[in-house]
Image (cartoon, rainbow, N blue to C red; front, side, top):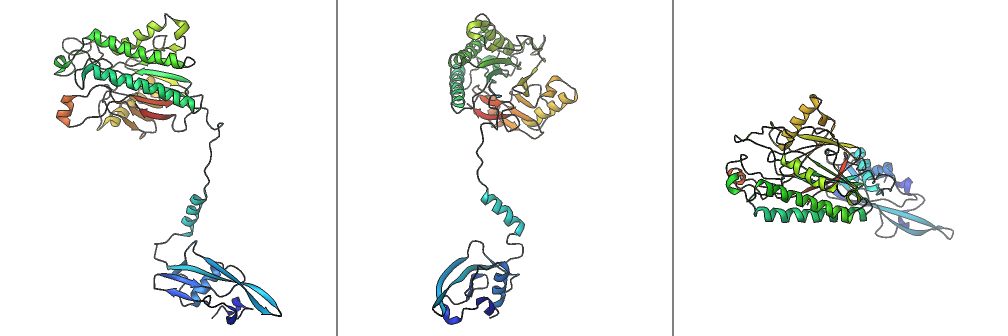
Length: 407
């Protein structure tokens, strides 16, 4: 063998039976044994051993992690012994491009050796977070899907879950600094002029619908004030198409802010202003001087500019996100107030959507109504009811949002 020098001063008879140098090879894989060595072989020595057995080091490789060692003490004369080592490694045939380059091996070792990093409490400003509850498309008064009774039960259940969510976030040390309750439009169903069968299927008149909305909003604020008296609570709203003041031709004929969706939220808040001792931490910027941007509002939520629109003003696009993002781009070009928003929320189309395709983030809220038999009959589509809740603020790592959950 060419490795006689590497094995010196040991001789063949020093090697215990079964540990002699050897190879097993089936043309694709096998193992290879070294002679007795003083030190662990490096890659160059493995290449020499492979070549000594008539294989090509360029076509054969040692499998990582397969090297085993055996050691024994052997007499070398004069009453002395020498610790000798013998190595066995699994080998395999290299295939053209089939095995990993040294570069990717290094990258994979980097992954394997990566230790988990524990986040320090100093890494994130948990205090600069808000939690939003988005009330979208309740359409109270609608007769479908179990009618007002079923809708009210769904909404109350979601409100209860929202209280538990706030409690949970506070318990784990990342509770919000402020709560936003935002009416996203179409809280009422109205009575006519929105679709052909509306007048026939509606169960509540206009005043009854608004009363139900006000009582439900009041219930949520009362739960928040009772359970979290230390938290700031901000109320806001945008007008939907079902809340419009329409004429007999089905057209809105006054101004965009003449809308039952806005009025219901403002009337709920107005009652709180009579008792500042209990509701001093409840505010509504639109009621207290914020300029209403007609059909939209933009609020700075814990350092993040957030826009809100019902969504019926979105026009062209192949799907919900395309319609919203196309409309939003137009607002940016026109330098409208909502152009400053980093995040946009909308409703109207009754199903959940999240899109980050533009570099900004668009969220579409699901609806809380009982569905539409006409829409399902004509399209086959339907979506589950739910209330979108989400955290917003510079205290979130990902684009200013987190804790996304539909209740």
